[in-house]
Image 1 (cartoon, rainbow, N blue to C red):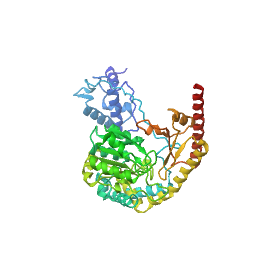
Image 2 (image 1 turned 45 degrees about the horizontal axis):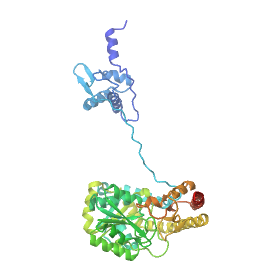
Image 3 (image 1 turned 90 degrees about the horizontal axis):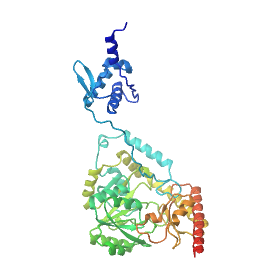
Image 4 (image 1 turned 30 degrees about the vertical axis):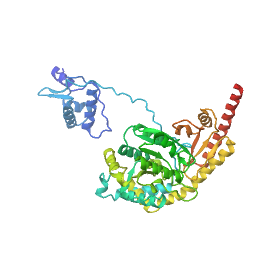
Length: 486
């Protein structure tokens, strides 16, 4: 006949609650600790409950006894259990209320589209990717101790030196590598400059229409945006002076204005630099796709003729691919310390191995060769879109196909009803930004900002055909509706 005392002890040494160990966790003691901790915190094991002996729980769970001992010790350190001399181990009498996992609120996270006409897409070059991968592996395998630390907050000296050489040769910007910062893209660089140089509420001129991402970056930092119109010569400086002569900064895309594609005339450049000097203001020059000029010599950057007031923002996202997350700032010498201080307070820099690997490819001429291969392909893509739109839109769209860049603008006729562009885009089934999206003040005709880099020619031609036909159809329907109402 069973001994009652033995039976009672055996029952005490068994946990009635089924405990499942997560075998993905390394080590038996960690598995037991995690399982018991969750059961206690979730309220499945009541406060004051006596836990089984280490031997009894080890037999129940099929683990080593020393794993239970270690788990109990960890729970004791957590304050989740209490050890009573001669009595055993008990769930702590005082525990926080059980917590339920709250779901994350629905977030409006928009992953950029990659269909024909999407912006920021580039062609994938297998040759370049192989060279970049090899350079990255080599840099990691041969890393010196200094390469494994935080390093200079400005980034890799090797890459900064190569960027300085490139800018001097191609953009007319002469700067010392000490004035360059490697950043994780244009918006990152812009945010650093805002934090270092501006105060919330400072007025900033902004091209209207202009680049939506930069407008958002300035807005969320508390800048007071002053919309300044753009014409065939670029930013209308006189309009900015009338609106807010004492603005503290201006954001411009002078070499290839986004989205109109016009290049700022020399007269406007000089006027803008003169205003900046008089107003003691900064010029944020976003030179976002200057590498791809299809006719004529490269344009001199604004920083090349007025470096003391200009902060130059460049990126490898258009040269190579957006996921590389590498860009750079060129900061006037007098401002470097302020921007570097802001940088050191926020973050450091992208992985130094990738920076040095990219610099190796620049030094070896690999990046320059890549751009030479891409220019004719992007020019051909631009021409495919333009020709297809001319053929299928039959005069209902006005095209602006600039001599450089990776997008073109197609505008609707003046007087087209509001909302027509959105309706046409839906009818055509295309992915593109509308010109109205880029405007602060809704003035002038709407249209379509069409990215053509990174897509097969047949896909571009098909998308352009659908856009052209949808434009004809919608405009005819709207015209018929107006006639019927009149």
